[in-house]
Image: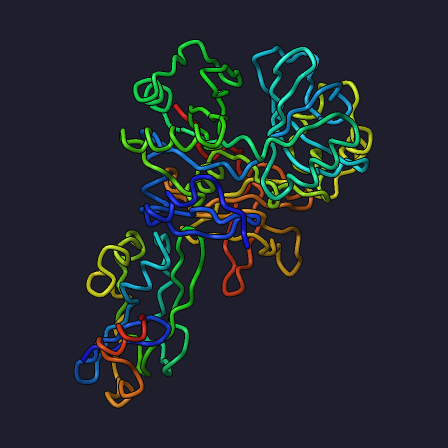
Length: 342
Length: 120
Protein backbone atom coordinates (compact mmCIF):
# COMPACT_ATOMS: atom_id res chain seq x y z
CA UNK A 1 0.00 0.00 0.00
CA UNK A 2 1.11 3.51 -0.74
CA UNK A 3 2.34 5.84 1.96
CA UNK A 4 0.06 8.64 3.12
CA UNK A 5 0.84 12.03 4.62
CA UNK A 6 -0.54 13.40 7.86
CA UNK A 7 -2.99 15.43 5.71
CA UNK A 8 -4.37 12.55 3.62
CA UNK A 9 -7.76 12.32 5.33
CA UNK A 10 -8.23 16.04 4.81
CA UNK A 11 -7.65 15.65 1.05
CA UNK A 12 -10.25 12.91 0.88
CA UNK A 13 -12.73 14.99 2.88
CA UNK A 14 -12.11 17.90 0.49
CA UNK A 15 -12.93 15.55 -2.44
CA UNK A 16 -9.47 15.87 -3.94
CA UNK A 17 -8.58 13.44 -6.70
CA UNK A 18 -5.89 11.13 -5.33
CA UNK A 19 -3.07 9.70 -7.46
CA UNK A 20 0.09 7.70 -6.90
CA UNK A 21 3.16 9.91 -6.79
CA UNK A 22 6.44 8.12 -6.12
CA UNK A 23 4.75 5.60 -3.84
CA UNK A 24 2.57 8.18 -2.08
CA UNK A 25 -1.19 8.73 -2.29
CA UNK A 26 -1.26 12.44 -3.08
CA UNK A 27 -3.92 14.95 -4.20
CA UNK A 28 -3.50 15.82 -7.88
CA UNK A 29 -6.31 18.36 -7.85
CA UNK A 30 -9.12 19.76 -5.72
CA UNK A 31 -11.38 22.02 -7.81
CA UNK A 32 -9.29 22.00 -11.01
CA UNK A 33 -5.65 22.29 -12.03
CA UNK A 34 -6.09 25.54 -13.96
CA UNK A 35 -8.05 27.29 -11.18
CA UNK A 36 -5.48 26.16 -8.63
CA UNK A 37 -2.63 27.32 -10.88
CA UNK A 38 -4.15 30.79 -11.30
CA UNK A 39 -4.82 31.02 -7.57
CA UNK A 40 -1.11 30.64 -6.85
CA UNK A 41 -0.09 33.09 -9.59
CA UNK A 42 -2.54 35.78 -8.50
CA UNK A 43 -3.19 35.26 -4.78
CA UNK A 44 -2.17 32.34 -2.60
CA UNK A 45 -2.45 28.55 -2.43
CA UNK A 46 -1.05 25.82 -0.21
CA UNK A 47 0.42 22.42 -0.98
CA UNK A 48 0.84 19.23 1.00
CA UNK A 49 4.55 18.50 0.53
CA UNK A 50 4.85 16.10 3.46
CA UNK A 51 5.90 13.35 1.03
CA UNK A 52 9.23 15.12 0.61
CA UNK A 53 11.88 14.14 3.12
CA UNK A 54 14.50 15.94 5.17
CA UNK A 55 17.66 14.74 6.90
CA UNK A 56 19.46 16.29 9.82
CA UNK A 57 23.14 16.12 8.95
CA UNK A 58 26.13 16.68 11.20
CA UNK A 59 29.62 17.18 9.91
CA UNK A 60 31.42 18.08 6.71
CA UNK A 61 28.94 17.92 3.85
CA UNK A 62 31.21 19.63 1.35
CA UNK A 63 32.26 16.44 -0.40
CA UNK A 64 28.67 15.19 -0.67
CA UNK A 65 26.78 18.12 -2.21
CA UNK A 66 27.47 20.31 -5.25
CA UNK A 67 26.51 23.67 -3.79
CA UNK A 68 29.13 25.77 -2.04
CA UNK A 69 28.41 25.44 1.67
CA UNK A 70 31.47 27.33 2.86
CA UNK A 71 29.90 30.64 1.87
CA UNK A 72 26.44 29.71 3.22
CA UNK A 73 25.49 31.66 6.34
CA UNK A 74 23.63 30.21 9.30
CA UNK A 75 20.01 31.16 8.59
CA UNK A 76 20.34 30.61 4.85
CA UNK A 77 19.70 27.71 2.49
CA UNK A 78 21.02 26.83 -0.95
CA UNK A 79 20.05 24.56 -3.85
CA UNK A 80 22.33 21.90 -5.32
CA UNK A 81 22.80 18.22 -6.20
CA UNK A 82 23.91 14.90 -4.86
CA UNK A 83 26.11 13.41 -7.60
CA UNK A 84 27.57 9.94 -7.99
CA UNK A 85 31.20 9.34 -9.00
CA UNK A 86 30.25 9.56 -12.69
CA UNK A 87 28.64 12.95 -12.17
CA UNK A 88 25.13 11.45 -12.46
CA UNK A 89 22.39 13.19 -10.48
CA UNK A 90 21.28 11.09 -7.49
CA UNK A 91 18.93 13.88 -6.44
CA UNK A 92 18.51 17.61 -6.26
CA UNK A 93 18.24 19.03 -2.76
CA UNK A 94 18.34 22.14 -0.62
CA UNK A 95 20.73 22.44 2.34
CA UNK A 96 19.74 24.63 5.27
CA UNK A 97 22.59 25.77 7.51
CA UNK A 98 21.30 25.33 11.08
CA UNK A 99 24.60 25.97 12.85
CA UNK A 100 28.34 25.89 12.12
CA UNK A 101 28.23 22.13 11.50
CA UNK A 102 24.53 21.17 11.51
CA UNK A 103 22.47 21.01 8.34
CA UNK A 104 19.01 20.09 7.18
CA UNK A 105 18.97 18.54 3.70
CA UNK A 106 15.58 18.50 1.94
CA UNK A 107 15.15 15.88 -0.77
CA UNK A 108 12.55 14.41 -3.12
CA UNK A 109 10.05 11.75 -2.03
CA UNK A 110 10.88 8.80 -4.27
CA UNK A 111 14.65 9.24 -3.97
CA UNK A 112 14.71 9.76 -0.19
CA UNK A 113 15.69 6.19 0.82
CA UNK A 114 18.60 5.99 -1.64
CA UNK A 115 19.65 9.57 -0.79
CA UNK A 116 19.74 8.68 2.88
CA UNK A 117 21.87 5.60 2.25
CA UNK A 118 24.24 7.65 0.07
CA UNK A 119 24.60 10.57 2.47
CA UNK A 120 25.05 8.23 5.43
CA UNK A 121 28.18 6.79 3.79
CA UNK A 122 29.93 10.12 4.34
CA UNK A 123 28.27 11.95 7.24
CA UNK A 124 26.10 11.36 10.26
CA UNK A 125 22.49 11.74 9.09
CA UNK A 126 19.11 11.40 10.79
CA UNK A 127 15.93 10.91 8.76
CA UNK A 128 13.20 13.31 9.93
CA UNK A 129 10.38 11.38 8.20
CA UNK A 130 8.90 10.08 11.45
CA UNK A 131 8.84 13.41 13.24
CA UNK A 132 8.49 16.21 10.72
CA UNK A 133 6.09 17.26 7.96
CA UNK A 134 6.05 20.15 5.50
CA UNK A 135 3.58 22.40 3.70
CA UNK A 136 4.23 25.10 1.11
CA UNK A 137 2.27 28.37 1.06
CA UNK A 138 2.86 30.02 -2.29
CA UNK A 139 1.72 33.07 -4.22
CA UNK A 140 2.19 36.85 -4.31
CA UNK A 141 0.13 37.12 -1.10
CA UNK A 142 1.67 34.10 0.65
CA UNK A 143 3.70 36.07 3.20
CA UNK A 144 0.98 38.57 4.03
CA UNK A 145 -1.62 35.79 4.37
CA UNK A 146 0.67 33.67 6.58
CA UNK A 147 1.25 36.76 8.74
CA UNK A 148 -2.45 37.64 8.89
CA UNK A 149 -3.69 34.12 9.61
CA UNK A 150 -0.86 32.53 11.58
CA UNK A 151 0.62 35.63 13.17
CA UNK A 152 4.05 34.82 11.72
CA UNK A 153 6.38 37.82 11.52
CA UNK A 154 8.05 37.26 8.17
CA UNK A 155 9.04 40.89 7.52
CA UNK A 156 12.75 40.08 7.96
CA UNK A 157 12.72 36.83 5.98
CA UNK A 158 14.63 37.23 2.72
CA UNK A 159 14.68 34.79 -0.23
CA UNK A 160 16.55 31.56 0.57
CA UNK A 161 16.63 32.40 4.28
CA UNK A 162 14.93 30.55 7.10
CA UNK A 163 13.85 31.37 10.62
CA UNK A 164 12.24 29.56 13.54
CA UNK A 165 8.84 30.58 14.87
CA UNK A 166 7.51 28.41 17.74
CA UNK A 167 8.11 24.81 16.65
CA UNK A 168 8.24 25.70 12.94
CA UNK A 169 11.19 26.24 10.62
CA UNK A 170 10.04 28.58 7.87
CA UNK A 171 12.01 29.31 4.70
CA UNK A 172 11.26 31.75 1.94
CA UNK A 173 11.50 29.16 -0.80
CA UNK A 174 9.20 27.17 -3.04
CA UNK A 175 8.68 25.39 -6.31
CA UNK A 176 6.15 27.55 -8.14
CA UNK A 177 8.06 30.57 -9.46
CA UNK A 178 6.11 32.77 -7.03
CA UNK A 179 7.02 34.26 -3.70
CA UNK A 180 6.16 32.03 -0.77
CA UNK A 181 7.27 29.95 2.16
CA UNK A 182 7.85 26.34 3.10
CA UNK A 183 6.95 25.38 6.67
CA UNK A 184 8.69 22.45 8.42
CA UNK A 185 7.19 21.37 11.74
CA UNK A 186 6.10 18.34 13.79
CA UNK A 187 3.21 16.40 12.20
CA UNK A 188 0.55 17.68 14.60
CA UNK A 189 1.63 21.31 14.11
CA UNK A 190 1.50 20.94 10.33
CA UNK A 191 -2.01 19.48 10.50
CA UNK A 192 -3.14 22.33 12.73
CA UNK A 193 -1.54 25.01 10.50
CA UNK A 194 -3.21 23.47 7.43
CA UNK A 195 -6.62 23.61 9.12
CA UNK A 196 -6.12 27.19 10.30
CA UNK A 197 -4.97 28.35 6.87
CA UNK A 198 -7.88 26.60 5.14
CA UNK A 199 -10.47 27.96 7.59
CA UNK A 200 -9.14 31.43 6.88
CA UNK A 201 -9.35 31.22 3.12
CA UNK A 202 -6.08 29.70 1.88
CA UNK A 203 -7.20 26.98 -0.51
CA UNK A 204 -5.28 23.76 -1.06
CA UNK A 205 -3.73 23.04 -4.44
CA UNK A 206 -2.72 19.67 -5.82
CA UNK A 207 0.33 18.22 -7.51
CA UNK A 208 -1.22 18.94 -10.92
CA UNK A 209 -0.97 22.69 -10.38
CA UNK A 210 2.39 22.24 -8.69
CA UNK A 211 3.62 20.64 -11.91
CA UNK A 212 2.29 23.32 -14.29
CA UNK A 213 3.57 26.06 -11.96
CA UNK A 214 7.08 24.58 -11.75
CA UNK A 215 7.21 23.89 -15.48
CA UNK A 216 6.08 27.41 -16.37
CA UNK A 217 8.73 28.75 -13.98
CA UNK A 218 11.35 26.65 -15.79
CA UNK A 219 12.08 24.46 -12.75
CA UNK A 220 13.27 20.91 -13.45
CA UNK A 221 11.75 17.85 -11.75
CA UNK A 222 13.67 14.79 -10.56
CA UNK A 223 12.70 11.70 -12.55
CA UNK A 224 11.99 13.89 -15.57
CA UNK A 225 14.81 16.36 -16.23
CA UNK A 226 17.16 14.72 -13.73
CA UNK A 227 18.22 11.15 -13.11
CA UNK A 228 21.48 9.27 -12.60
CA UNK A 229 22.18 9.18 -16.36
CA UNK A 230 22.34 12.99 -16.46
CA UNK A 231 24.88 15.31 -14.88
CA UNK A 232 24.43 19.05 -14.26
CA UNK A 233 26.43 19.56 -17.47
CA UNK A 234 23.76 18.02 -19.71
CA UNK A 235 20.99 19.44 -17.49
CA UNK A 236 22.21 23.04 -17.98
CA UNK A 237 22.49 23.50 -14.23
CA UNK A 238 26.25 23.86 -13.79
CA UNK A 239 25.61 27.11 -11.92
CA UNK A 240 24.49 24.99 -8.96
CA UNK A 241 27.62 22.87 -9.16
CA UNK A 242 30.51 25.12 -10.08
CA UNK A 243 31.44 27.25 -7.10
CA UNK A 244 32.29 24.56 -4.56
CA UNK A 245 35.94 23.45 -4.50
CA UNK A 246 35.53 19.74 -4.78
CA UNK A 247 32.74 17.24 -4.34
CA UNK A 248 31.92 13.74 -5.47
CA UNK A 249 31.25 13.72 -9.20
CA UNK A 250 32.73 17.14 -9.95
CA UNK A 251 35.65 15.88 -12.04
CA UNK A 252 33.41 13.57 -14.08
CA UNK A 253 30.81 16.33 -14.48
CA UNK A 254 33.39 18.79 -15.86
CA UNK A 255 34.72 16.08 -18.17
CA UNK A 256 31.18 15.56 -19.49
CA UNK A 257 30.74 19.33 -19.92
CA UNK A 258 33.71 19.38 -22.33
CA UNK A 259 32.11 16.80 -24.60
CA UNK A 260 28.34 17.06 -24.32
CA UNK A 261 26.34 14.29 -25.95
CA UNK A 262 22.97 15.85 -25.15
CA UNK A 263 21.65 18.99 -23.59
CA UNK A 264 18.47 20.00 -21.78
CA UNK A 265 16.44 22.64 -23.61
CA UNK A 266 13.21 24.48 -22.95
CA UNK A 267 10.83 24.49 -25.89
CA UNK A 268 7.59 26.15 -26.88
CA UNK A 269 5.11 24.46 -29.19
CA UNK A 270 3.34 26.20 -32.06
CA UNK A 271 -0.16 25.36 -30.86
CA UNK A 272 -1.99 24.47 -27.66
CA UNK A 273 -1.41 20.75 -28.06
CA UNK A 274 1.06 19.40 -25.49
CA UNK A 275 4.13 17.24 -25.86
CA UNK A 276 4.53 14.61 -23.14
CA UNK A 277 7.30 12.89 -21.23
CA UNK A 278 8.97 10.19 -23.34
CA UNK A 279 7.92 11.42 -26.78
CA UNK A 280 10.72 11.46 -29.37
CA UNK A 281 12.14 14.72 -30.72
CA UNK A 282 12.58 14.49 -34.49
CA UNK A 283 14.38 16.34 -37.23
CA UNK A 284 13.22 14.83 -40.49
CA UNK A 285 13.59 11.06 -40.07
CA UNK A 286 16.20 11.37 -37.34
CA UNK A 287 15.42 11.14 -33.66
CA UNK A 288 17.52 13.85 -32.05
CA UNK A 289 16.19 13.80 -28.51
CA UNK A 290 13.43 12.98 -26.06
CA UNK A 291 10.82 15.03 -24.18
CA UNK A 292 11.12 14.96 -20.38
CA UNK A 293 8.21 17.24 -19.40
CA UNK A 294 5.42 18.88 -21.34
CA UNK A 295 2.14 20.54 -20.60
CA UNK A 296 -0.17 23.34 -21.50
CA UNK A 297 0.67 26.09 -18.99
CA UNK A 298 -2.22 28.35 -17.96
CA UNK A 299 -0.57 31.71 -17.21
CA UNK A 300 1.42 31.91 -20.44
CA UNK A 301 -1.45 30.14 -22.26
CA UNK A 302 0.94 28.01 -24.26
CA UNK A 303 2.17 24.43 -24.48
CA UNK A 304 5.79 24.20 -23.37
CA UNK A 305 8.23 21.64 -22.11
CA UNK A 306 11.74 20.36 -21.58
CA UNK A 307 13.68 17.92 -23.77
CA UNK A 308 17.15 16.47 -24.01
CA UNK A 309 18.46 17.03 -27.54
CA UNK A 310 21.72 16.72 -29.43
CA UNK A 311 23.78 19.85 -28.69
CA UNK A 312 23.51 21.17 -32.26
CA UNK A 313 19.74 21.58 -31.68
CA UNK A 314 20.15 23.34 -28.33
CA UNK A 315 20.65 27.03 -29.29
CA UNK A 316 17.71 29.40 -28.72
CA UNK A 317 15.62 29.58 -31.87
CA UNK A 318 16.49 26.05 -33.04
CA UNK A 319 13.43 24.20 -34.30
CA UNK A 320 12.42 20.54 -34.30
CA UNK A 321 9.32 18.35 -34.22
CA UNK A 322 7.88 16.24 -31.46
CA UNK A 323 6.21 12.99 -32.46
CA UNK A 324 3.17 12.33 -30.28
CA UNK A 325 2.32 9.14 -32.15
CA UNK A 326 -0.33 10.83 -34.30
CA UNK A 327 1.13 14.09 -35.49
CA UNK A 328 4.37 16.02 -35.50
CA UNK A 329 4.20 19.07 -33.25
CA UNK A 330 6.42 22.01 -34.25
CA UNK A 331 8.64 23.30 -31.44
CA UNK A 332 11.18 26.09 -30.96
CA UNK A 333 13.95 26.23 -28.36
CA UNK A 334 13.39 29.20 -26.05
CA UNK A 335 15.01 30.61 -22.94
CA UNK A 336 13.64 29.37 -19.61
CA UNK A 337 11.80 30.38 -17.50
CA UNK A 338 8.65 30.56 -19.60
CA UNK A 339 7.13 32.75 -16.89
CA UNK A 340 8.87 35.22 -14.60
CA UNK A 341 7.03 36.82 -11.71
CA UNK A 342 6.63 40.60 -11.81
CA UNK B 1 -32.46 10.29 -29.70
CA UNK B 2 -29.47 10.59 -27.38
CA UNK B 3 -27.18 7.63 -26.75
CA UNK B 4 -23.91 7.00 -24.90
CA UNK B 5 -20.92 4.73 -25.46
CA UNK B 6 -18.89 2.79 -22.94
CA UNK B 7 -15.99 5.08 -23.90
CA UNK B 8 -18.09 8.03 -22.64
CA UNK B 9 -18.99 9.70 -25.93
CA UNK B 10 -22.54 10.87 -26.51
CA UNK B 11 -24.38 11.03 -29.83
CA UNK B 12 -27.62 12.84 -30.49
CA UNK B 13 -29.26 11.44 -33.61
CA UNK B 14 -31.99 13.29 -35.49
CA UNK B 15 -32.98 11.63 -38.75
CA UNK B 16 -29.75 11.06 -40.67
CA UNK B 17 -27.63 13.62 -38.83
CA UNK B 18 -25.95 13.26 -35.46
CA UNK B 19 -24.01 15.51 -33.06
CA UNK B 20 -21.14 13.93 -31.14
CA UNK B 21 -19.34 14.90 -27.96
CA UNK B 22 -18.02 13.53 -24.68
CA UNK B 23 -20.14 13.02 -21.60
CA UNK B 24 -20.22 15.07 -18.43
CA UNK B 25 -18.60 12.12 -16.67
CA UNK B 26 -15.78 12.08 -19.25
CA UNK B 27 -14.99 15.78 -18.93
CA UNK B 28 -14.99 15.49 -15.17
CA UNK B 29 -12.61 12.54 -15.26
CA UNK B 30 -10.28 14.32 -17.72
CA UNK B 31 -10.16 17.59 -15.79
CA UNK B 32 -9.38 20.95 -17.38
CA UNK B 33 -9.34 20.51 -21.15
CA UNK B 34 -6.65 22.49 -22.95
CA UNK B 35 -6.80 21.25 -26.55
CA UNK B 36 -9.18 19.45 -28.89
CA UNK B 37 -8.05 17.85 -32.14
CA UNK B 38 -11.08 18.03 -34.43
CA UNK B 39 -11.75 15.71 -37.38
CA UNK B 40 -11.54 16.95 -40.96
CA UNK B 41 -14.86 17.94 -42.54
CA UNK B 42 -15.76 15.35 -45.17
CA UNK B 43 -14.09 12.48 -43.37
CA UNK B 44 -16.05 9.24 -43.67
CA UNK B 45 -16.19 7.31 -40.43
CA UNK B 46 -17.25 3.88 -39.29
CA UNK B 47 -18.60 3.43 -35.78
CA UNK B 48 -15.58 3.08 -33.49
CA UNK B 49 -13.17 5.05 -35.71
CA UNK B 50 -11.11 7.71 -33.95
CA UNK B 51 -12.49 11.20 -34.58
CA UNK B 52 -10.09 13.26 -32.54
CA UNK B 53 -8.20 13.81 -29.33
CA UNK B 54 -9.16 15.67 -26.19
CA UNK B 55 -6.20 16.82 -24.12
CA UNK B 56 -6.36 17.84 -20.51
CA UNK B 57 -3.53 19.32 -18.48
CA UNK B 58 -2.40 15.83 -17.50
CA UNK B 59 -3.30 13.53 -20.39
CA UNK B 60 -4.56 13.02 -23.94
CA UNK B 61 -7.58 10.83 -24.73
CA UNK B 62 -8.79 9.55 -28.07
CA UNK B 63 -12.42 10.12 -28.98
CA UNK B 64 -14.22 7.51 -31.09
CA UNK B 65 -17.24 7.97 -33.30
CA UNK B 66 -20.29 6.30 -31.72
CA UNK B 67 -21.91 5.77 -35.15
CA UNK B 68 -20.97 5.63 -38.83
CA UNK B 69 -21.33 8.77 -40.93
CA UNK B 70 -19.58 11.65 -42.66
CA UNK B 71 -18.22 14.66 -40.80
CA UNK B 72 -20.23 17.66 -42.03
CA UNK B 73 -19.32 20.26 -39.44
CA UNK B 74 -16.93 20.68 -36.51
CA UNK B 75 -17.21 22.91 -33.46
CA UNK B 76 -14.40 25.32 -34.27
CA UNK B 77 -15.16 27.31 -31.09
CA UNK B 78 -13.17 24.57 -29.38
CA UNK B 79 -9.95 25.75 -31.10
CA UNK B 80 -9.83 28.88 -28.97
CA UNK B 81 -12.07 27.75 -26.10
CA UNK B 82 -11.56 24.03 -25.39
CA UNK B 83 -12.90 24.70 -21.88
CA UNK B 84 -16.40 24.70 -23.45
CA UNK B 85 -16.22 20.92 -23.07
CA UNK B 86 -15.77 21.32 -19.31
CA UNK B 87 -18.47 23.97 -19.05
CA UNK B 88 -21.17 22.35 -21.21
CA UNK B 89 -19.96 18.98 -22.47
CA UNK B 90 -23.32 17.88 -23.85
CA UNK B 91 -24.43 21.18 -25.44
CA UNK B 92 -21.99 23.99 -26.42
CA UNK B 93 -19.08 21.59 -26.06
CA UNK B 94 -20.21 19.35 -28.95
CA UNK B 95 -17.29 18.17 -31.09
CA UNK B 96 -18.64 17.40 -34.56
CA UNK B 97 -21.76 16.78 -36.64
CA UNK B 98 -22.17 13.74 -38.85
CA UNK B 99 -24.46 13.19 -41.84
CA UNK B 100 -25.46 9.96 -43.60
CA UNK B 101 -26.07 8.39 -40.22
CA UNK B 102 -28.09 5.18 -39.90
CA UNK B 103 -30.34 5.32 -36.87
CA UNK B 104 -29.98 1.56 -36.39
CA UNK B 105 -26.33 2.17 -35.35
CA UNK B 106 -27.73 3.53 -32.08
CA UNK B 107 -29.18 0.16 -31.12
CA UNK B 108 -25.82 -0.98 -29.73
CA UNK B 109 -25.49 2.13 -27.55
CA UNK B 110 -26.88 3.02 -24.13
CA UNK B 111 -29.70 5.42 -23.42
CA UNK B 112 -29.33 7.90 -20.58
CA UNK B 113 -30.69 5.54 -17.91
CA UNK B 114 -28.49 2.66 -19.05
CA UNK B 115 -25.44 4.95 -19.15
CA UNK B 116 -26.07 6.21 -15.62
CA UNK B 117 -26.39 2.59 -14.48
CA UNK B 118 -23.14 1.78 -16.33
CA UNK B 119 -21.40 4.61 -14.44
CA UNK B 120 -22.67 3.04 -11.22
